[in-house]
Amino acid sequence: MNRRVLSGVHLFQGDEACAEGAIAAGCNLFAGYPITPATEVSERLSWRLFDVGGIFVQGADELDSLTIVIGAACGGWKAMTATSGNGICLMQECIGYAAITETPCVIVDVQRAGPGTGVATKTMQGDVYQVRYGSNADYSIIALVPDSPQEMFDLTVEAFNLSEIYRVPTFILADEIVGHMREKVVIPDKVRVVERRKPKAWSKDFVPFKVESDTDVPPMPAFGEGYRMPVSGLTHTETGSPSTSYEVQKALVERLCNKVEKKVEDLTRVETEFMEDAEIVVVSYGSTARSAKRAVIEARKEGIKAGYLRLITLWPFPDSYLKRVADKIPKGIIVPEMNVGKMVREVERSVGTQVEVLSLPKPGVELHRPSEIYNLIRKVN
Image (tube, rainbow, N blue to C red):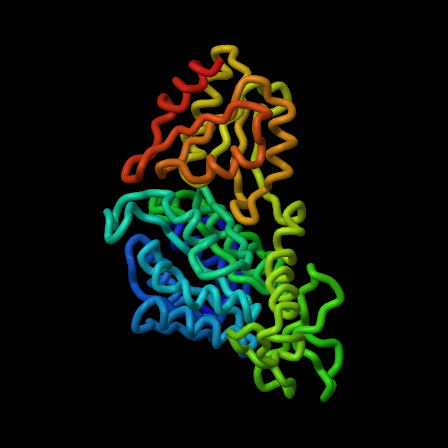
Protein backbone atom coordinates (compact mmCIF):
# COMPACT_ATOMS: atom_id res chain seq x y z
CA MET A 1 0.00 0.00 0.00
CA ASN A 2 2.57 2.59 1.20
CA ARG A 3 0.05 5.43 1.10
CA ARG A 4 0.41 8.16 3.67
CA VAL A 5 -3.01 9.71 3.08
CA LEU A 6 -5.94 7.31 2.58
CA SER A 7 -7.98 9.87 0.67
CA GLY A 8 -11.67 9.22 0.16
CA VAL A 9 -14.77 8.57 2.23
CA HIS A 10 -14.46 6.10 5.11
CA LEU A 11 -16.55 4.73 7.97
CA PHE A 12 -14.15 5.12 10.90
CA GLN A 13 -14.24 5.03 14.64
CA GLY A 14 -12.92 8.22 16.18
CA ASP A 15 -9.80 6.42 17.39
CA GLU A 16 -9.17 5.05 13.90
CA ALA A 17 -9.64 8.49 12.37
CA CYS A 18 -7.12 9.87 14.87
CA ALA A 19 -4.57 7.29 13.74
CA GLU A 20 -5.11 8.25 10.11
CA GLY A 21 -4.77 11.93 11.00
CA ALA A 22 -1.41 11.19 12.58
CA ILE A 23 -0.22 9.38 9.46
CA ALA A 24 -1.42 12.23 7.23
CA ALA A 25 0.39 14.77 9.43
CA GLY A 26 3.70 12.97 8.96
CA CYS A 27 3.87 10.98 12.19
CA ASN A 28 6.53 8.32 11.82
CA LEU A 29 6.75 7.01 15.39
CA PHE A 30 4.08 5.99 17.86
CA ALA A 31 4.80 4.65 21.32
CA GLY A 32 2.01 3.68 23.66
CA TYR A 33 0.63 1.22 26.17
CA PRO A 34 -2.81 -0.34 25.60
CA ILE A 35 -5.57 1.29 27.64
CA THR A 36 -9.33 1.53 27.15
CA PRO A 37 -10.76 3.57 25.45
CA ALA A 38 -7.65 4.63 23.46
CA THR A 39 -6.40 1.17 22.44
CA GLU A 40 -7.81 1.38 18.93
CA VAL A 41 -5.44 4.25 18.15
CA SER A 42 -2.51 1.97 18.97
CA GLU A 43 -4.02 -1.00 17.16
CA ARG A 44 -4.42 0.84 13.88
CA LEU A 45 -1.02 2.51 14.03
CA SER A 46 0.63 -0.83 14.83
CA TRP A 47 0.23 -1.75 11.16
CA ARG A 48 -0.39 1.57 9.41
CA LEU A 49 2.99 2.96 10.46
CA PHE A 50 4.73 0.04 8.79
CA ASP A 51 2.84 0.89 5.59
CA VAL A 52 4.58 4.27 5.49
CA GLY A 53 8.00 3.29 6.80
CA GLY A 54 7.41 4.36 10.39
CA ILE A 55 8.00 2.68 13.74
CA PHE A 56 5.48 1.39 16.30
CA VAL A 57 6.62 0.73 19.86
CA GLN A 58 4.52 -0.78 22.63
CA GLY A 59 6.10 0.74 25.71
CA ALA A 60 6.48 -0.98 29.07
CA ASP A 61 4.09 1.62 30.48
CA GLU A 62 2.83 5.14 29.78
CA LEU A 63 5.87 6.90 31.24
CA ASP A 64 8.15 4.77 29.08
CA SER A 65 6.02 5.50 26.03
CA LEU A 66 6.13 9.29 26.31
CA THR A 67 9.87 9.14 27.00
CA ILE A 68 10.31 7.31 23.69
CA VAL A 69 8.14 9.89 21.92
CA ILE A 70 10.23 12.77 23.31
CA GLY A 71 13.46 11.07 22.24
CA ALA A 72 12.13 10.51 18.74
CA ALA A 73 11.02 14.15 18.49
CA CYS A 74 14.49 15.32 19.53
CA GLY A 75 15.81 13.17 16.70
CA GLY A 76 13.70 15.12 14.22
CA TRP A 77 10.73 12.76 13.98
CA LYS A 78 7.08 13.54 14.41
CA ALA A 79 5.90 11.35 17.26
CA MET A 80 2.72 10.64 19.20
CA THR A 81 1.30 8.62 22.06
CA ALA A 82 -2.28 7.83 23.09
CA THR A 83 -3.75 6.99 26.47
CA SER A 84 -6.55 7.80 28.92
CA GLY A 85 -6.66 9.60 32.26
CA ASN A 86 -4.81 6.90 34.21
CA GLY A 87 -1.98 7.00 31.72
CA ILE A 88 -1.88 10.81 31.77
CA CYS A 89 -1.24 10.51 35.53
CA LEU A 90 1.92 8.52 34.81
CA MET A 91 3.03 10.84 32.00
CA GLN A 92 3.06 14.05 34.01
CA GLU A 93 6.79 14.08 34.71
CA CYS A 94 7.53 13.71 31.02
CA ILE A 95 4.95 16.34 30.05
CA GLY A 96 6.81 18.85 32.21
CA TYR A 97 10.10 17.70 30.72
CA ALA A 98 8.79 18.17 27.18
CA ALA A 99 7.56 21.63 28.16
CA ILE A 100 10.88 22.86 29.57
CA THR A 101 12.96 21.34 26.75
CA GLU A 102 10.41 22.67 24.22
CA THR A 103 10.06 19.31 22.54
CA PRO A 104 7.09 19.03 20.15
CA CYS A 105 4.92 15.96 20.70
CA VAL A 106 1.26 14.97 20.39
CA ILE A 107 -0.58 13.25 23.24
CA VAL A 108 -4.03 11.78 22.65
CA ASP A 109 -6.18 11.50 25.78
CA VAL A 110 -9.41 9.57 25.19
CA GLN A 111 -11.07 10.33 28.51
CA ARG A 112 -12.98 7.77 30.55
CA ALA A 113 -14.91 7.83 33.81
CA GLY A 114 -12.82 8.19 36.95
CA PRO A 115 -11.15 8.88 39.32
CA GLY A 116 -8.83 5.91 39.74
CA THR A 117 -9.59 2.98 37.49
CA GLY A 118 -13.16 4.27 37.29
CA VAL A 119 -15.32 2.84 34.51
CA ALA A 120 -12.93 2.02 31.67
CA THR A 121 -15.61 1.62 29.01
CA LYS A 122 -17.66 4.73 29.83
CA THR A 123 -17.16 8.39 29.06
CA MET A 124 -16.26 11.50 31.06
CA GLN A 125 -14.62 14.89 30.58
CA GLY A 126 -12.63 14.69 33.78
CA ASP A 127 -9.10 15.34 32.49
CA VAL A 128 -9.53 18.92 31.34
CA TYR A 129 -7.46 20.36 34.21
CA GLN A 130 -5.15 17.36 34.40
CA VAL A 131 -3.67 17.94 30.94
CA ARG A 132 -3.25 21.65 31.62
CA TYR A 133 -1.89 21.72 35.15
CA GLY A 134 -0.87 18.14 35.93
CA SER A 135 2.90 18.57 35.87
CA ASN A 136 4.78 20.74 38.32
CA ALA A 137 5.31 24.50 38.15
CA ASP A 138 4.43 26.85 35.27
CA TYR A 139 4.28 26.18 31.53
CA SER A 140 1.65 26.13 28.79
CA ILE A 141 0.26 23.46 26.51
CA ILE A 142 -2.26 23.34 23.68
CA ALA A 143 -5.39 21.16 23.87
CA LEU A 144 -7.91 20.61 21.06
CA VAL A 145 -11.26 18.94 21.70
CA PRO A 146 -12.97 17.01 18.86
CA ASP A 147 -16.66 16.16 18.82
CA SER A 148 -16.70 13.65 15.95
CA PRO A 149 -14.57 11.11 14.09
CA GLN A 150 -14.11 13.70 11.34
CA GLU A 151 -12.58 16.10 13.84
CA MET A 152 -10.48 13.30 15.31
CA PHE A 153 -8.80 13.24 11.90
CA ASP A 154 -8.73 16.98 11.27
CA LEU A 155 -7.61 18.05 14.73
CA THR A 156 -4.90 15.39 14.95
CA VAL A 157 -3.34 16.91 11.84
CA GLU A 158 -3.74 20.34 13.41
CA ALA A 159 -2.23 19.15 16.70
CA PHE A 160 0.94 18.05 14.93
CA ASN A 161 1.16 21.37 13.11
CA LEU A 162 0.71 23.44 16.28
CA SER A 163 3.14 21.29 18.21
CA GLU A 164 5.82 21.93 15.62
CA ILE A 165 5.10 25.67 15.44
CA TYR A 166 5.04 26.32 19.18
CA ARG A 167 7.32 23.51 20.39
CA VAL A 168 4.90 22.37 23.11
CA PRO A 169 3.13 19.16 24.12
CA THR A 170 -0.17 19.31 22.24
CA PHE A 171 -3.20 17.28 23.31
CA ILE A 172 -6.14 15.77 21.52
CA LEU A 173 -8.60 15.80 24.40
CA ALA A 174 -11.25 13.37 23.20
CA ASP A 175 -13.62 11.23 25.26
CA GLU A 176 -14.86 7.65 25.06
CA ILE A 177 -17.96 8.54 23.05
CA VAL A 178 -16.01 10.39 20.37
CA GLY A 179 -13.27 7.76 20.38
CA HIS A 180 -15.65 4.86 19.86
CA MET A 181 -18.44 6.34 17.74
CA ARG A 182 -18.35 5.38 14.08
CA GLU A 183 -19.22 7.97 11.43
CA LYS A 184 -18.32 9.09 7.93
CA VAL A 185 -14.85 10.58 7.68
CA VAL A 186 -13.76 12.41 4.54
CA ILE A 187 -9.99 12.46 4.01
CA PRO A 188 -8.77 14.91 1.35
CA ASP A 189 -6.04 14.11 -1.15
CA LYS A 190 -3.77 16.66 0.51
CA VAL A 191 -3.63 18.11 4.00
CA ARG A 192 -1.70 21.11 5.28
CA VAL A 193 1.41 19.85 7.04
CA VAL A 194 3.78 22.17 8.94
CA GLU A 195 7.40 21.24 9.44
CA ARG A 196 9.38 22.55 12.39
CA ARG A 197 11.56 25.60 11.93
CA LYS A 198 15.25 24.81 11.87
CA PRO A 199 18.34 27.06 12.00
CA LYS A 200 18.92 28.87 8.71
CA ALA A 201 22.57 27.88 8.48
CA TRP A 202 24.98 25.78 10.49
CA SER A 203 27.24 27.64 12.88
CA LYS A 204 29.58 26.44 15.58
CA ASP A 205 28.29 29.38 17.65
CA PHE A 206 24.66 28.21 17.48
CA VAL A 207 22.72 29.19 20.64
CA PRO A 208 19.88 26.67 21.02
CA PHE A 209 17.41 28.77 23.02
CA LYS A 210 18.25 32.26 21.78
CA VAL A 211 15.15 34.43 21.27
CA GLU A 212 14.34 38.08 20.66
CA SER A 213 11.21 38.36 22.82
CA ASP A 214 9.26 36.55 25.52
CA THR A 215 6.88 35.07 22.95
CA ASP A 216 9.47 33.72 20.53
CA VAL A 217 9.94 30.04 19.70
CA PRO A 218 13.56 29.17 18.90
CA PRO A 219 14.41 26.99 15.89
CA MET A 220 14.99 23.33 16.69
CA PRO A 221 17.68 21.25 14.99
CA ALA A 222 17.60 17.47 15.35
CA PHE A 223 20.17 15.30 17.01
CA GLY A 224 22.84 14.28 14.52
CA GLU A 225 22.68 17.44 12.44
CA GLY A 226 25.90 18.84 13.88
CA TYR A 227 24.46 21.30 16.36
CA ARG A 228 24.97 21.39 20.11
CA MET A 229 21.44 20.72 21.34
CA PRO A 230 21.16 20.23 25.13
CA VAL A 231 17.82 18.92 26.39
CA SER A 232 18.22 19.17 30.14
CA GLY A 233 15.15 19.39 32.35
CA LEU A 234 17.02 21.88 34.52
CA THR A 235 16.36 25.61 34.36
CA HIS A 236 18.73 26.78 31.65
CA THR A 237 20.16 29.80 29.90
CA GLU A 238 19.88 30.49 26.16
CA THR A 239 22.88 28.21 25.65
CA GLY A 240 21.13 25.36 27.45
CA SER A 241 23.49 25.56 30.42
CA PRO A 242 21.93 24.92 33.87
CA SER A 243 21.37 27.99 36.04
CA THR A 244 20.02 28.82 39.50
CA SER A 245 19.66 32.52 38.71
CA TYR A 246 16.33 34.19 39.42
CA GLU A 247 16.62 36.25 36.24
CA VAL A 248 17.16 33.13 34.13
CA GLN A 249 14.28 31.29 35.84
CA LYS A 250 11.95 34.28 35.35
CA ALA A 251 12.81 34.73 31.68
CA LEU A 252 12.50 31.03 30.88
CA VAL A 253 9.20 30.38 32.67
CA GLU A 254 7.58 33.53 31.35
CA ARG A 255 8.52 32.61 27.80
CA LEU A 256 7.30 29.02 28.18
CA CYS A 257 3.93 30.46 29.16
CA ASN A 258 3.80 33.55 26.94
CA LYS A 259 4.70 31.82 23.67
CA VAL A 260 1.29 30.12 23.91
CA GLU A 261 -0.85 32.34 26.17
CA LYS A 262 -0.08 35.55 24.28
CA LYS A 263 -0.98 33.81 21.00
CA VAL A 264 -4.42 32.79 22.23
CA GLU A 265 -6.22 34.78 19.53
CA ASP A 266 -4.32 32.86 16.86
CA LEU A 267 -5.04 29.55 18.59
CA THR A 268 -8.73 30.04 19.35
CA ARG A 269 -10.98 27.67 17.41
CA VAL A 270 -14.73 27.58 18.01
CA GLU A 271 -17.94 26.53 16.30
CA THR A 272 -20.99 28.75 16.63
CA GLU A 273 -24.62 28.73 15.53
CA PHE A 274 -27.57 31.05 16.21
CA MET A 275 -25.34 33.63 17.90
CA GLU A 276 -26.51 36.72 16.00
CA ASP A 277 -29.48 37.47 18.28
CA ALA A 278 -28.79 35.05 21.14
CA GLU A 279 -29.94 36.00 24.63
CA ILE A 280 -28.86 32.70 26.19
CA VAL A 281 -25.74 30.81 25.09
CA VAL A 282 -24.83 27.18 25.71
CA VAL A 283 -21.05 26.82 25.92
CA SER A 284 -19.94 23.22 25.49
CA TYR A 285 -17.14 21.03 24.18
CA GLY A 286 -16.52 17.46 23.02
CA SER A 287 -19.34 14.95 22.83
CA THR A 288 -21.49 17.06 25.18
CA ALA A 289 -21.73 19.63 22.40
CA ARG A 290 -23.77 17.23 20.30
CA SER A 291 -26.53 17.26 22.92
CA ALA A 292 -26.10 21.00 23.40
CA LYS A 293 -26.68 21.71 19.71
CA ARG A 294 -29.87 19.65 19.66
CA ALA A 295 -31.13 21.44 22.78
CA VAL A 296 -30.49 24.85 21.21
CA ILE A 297 -32.25 23.83 17.99
CA GLU A 298 -35.31 22.70 19.98
CA ALA A 299 -35.29 25.94 21.98
CA ARG A 300 -35.18 27.94 18.77
CA LYS A 301 -38.27 26.07 17.56
CA GLU A 302 -40.05 27.38 20.67
CA GLY A 303 -39.00 30.94 19.93
CA ILE A 304 -36.27 31.09 22.58
CA LYS A 305 -33.25 33.06 21.42
CA ALA A 306 -30.63 30.48 22.34
CA GLY A 307 -27.12 30.33 20.89
CA TYR A 308 -24.63 27.52 20.52
CA LEU A 309 -20.90 27.92 21.17
CA ARG A 310 -18.57 24.93 21.02
CA LEU A 311 -15.03 25.30 22.29
CA ILE A 312 -12.59 23.44 20.04
CA THR A 313 -9.51 25.00 21.61
CA LEU A 314 -9.75 24.36 25.33
CA TRP A 315 -6.17 25.41 26.17
CA PRO A 316 -5.09 28.13 25.98
CA PHE A 317 -8.55 29.11 27.17
CA PRO A 318 -10.12 31.81 24.95
CA ASP A 319 -10.77 34.38 27.70
CA SER A 320 -11.05 37.41 25.45
CA TYR A 321 -13.37 35.64 23.04
CA LEU A 322 -15.72 34.59 25.87
CA LYS A 323 -15.70 38.10 27.28
CA ARG A 324 -16.73 39.53 23.90
CA VAL A 325 -19.54 36.98 23.71
CA ALA A 326 -20.73 37.82 27.23
CA ASP A 327 -20.95 41.53 26.33
CA LYS A 328 -23.87 40.70 24.02
CA ILE A 329 -25.73 38.10 26.14
CA PRO A 330 -28.36 39.51 28.52
CA LYS A 331 -29.85 36.40 30.12
CA GLY A 332 -27.23 33.77 30.84
CA ILE A 333 -24.56 31.30 29.79
CA ILE A 334 -25.08 27.58 30.39
CA VAL A 335 -22.09 25.22 30.61
CA PRO A 336 -22.95 21.51 30.40
CA GLU A 337 -20.00 19.16 30.92
CA MET A 338 -19.35 15.58 31.99
CA ASN A 339 -17.64 16.38 35.28
CA VAL A 340 -18.67 18.13 38.48
CA GLY A 341 -17.99 21.55 36.97
CA LYS A 342 -14.51 22.37 35.71
CA MET A 343 -14.54 24.51 32.59
CA VAL A 344 -17.47 26.48 33.99
CA ARG A 345 -14.89 28.01 36.33
CA GLU A 346 -12.91 29.22 33.32
CA VAL A 347 -16.04 30.69 31.76
CA GLU A 348 -16.92 32.45 35.04
CA ARG A 349 -13.39 33.81 35.32
CA SER A 350 -13.51 35.09 31.75
CA VAL A 351 -16.88 36.83 31.85
CA GLY A 352 -16.80 38.04 35.46
CA THR A 353 -20.09 39.60 36.53
CA GLN A 354 -21.21 40.58 33.04
CA VAL A 355 -23.77 37.79 32.84
CA GLU A 356 -24.96 34.88 34.99
CA VAL A 357 -23.13 31.60 34.34
CA LEU A 358 -24.92 28.35 35.16
CA SER A 359 -23.23 24.99 35.51
CA LEU A 360 -24.93 21.82 34.32
CA PRO A 361 -22.61 19.06 35.55
CA LYS A 362 -22.86 15.33 35.03
CA PRO A 363 -20.10 13.19 36.59
CA GLY A 364 -19.44 10.83 33.74
CA VAL A 365 -20.70 7.44 32.45
CA GLU A 366 -23.77 9.03 30.80
CA LEU A 367 -23.93 11.83 28.25
CA HIS A 368 -26.30 14.73 28.84
CA ARG A 369 -29.68 14.26 27.22
CA PRO A 370 -30.67 17.20 25.01
CA SER A 371 -33.81 17.53 27.15
CA GLU A 372 -31.71 18.22 30.27
CA ILE A 373 -29.99 21.15 28.59
CA TYR A 374 -33.22 22.30 26.94
CA ASN A 375 -35.05 22.40 30.29
CA LEU A 376 -32.37 24.65 31.77
CA ILE A 377 -32.53 26.92 28.72
CA ARG A 378 -36.28 27.31 29.30
CA LYS A 379 -35.72 28.01 33.00
CA VAL A 380 -33.16 30.73 32.28
CA ASN A 381 -35.41 32.26 29.62
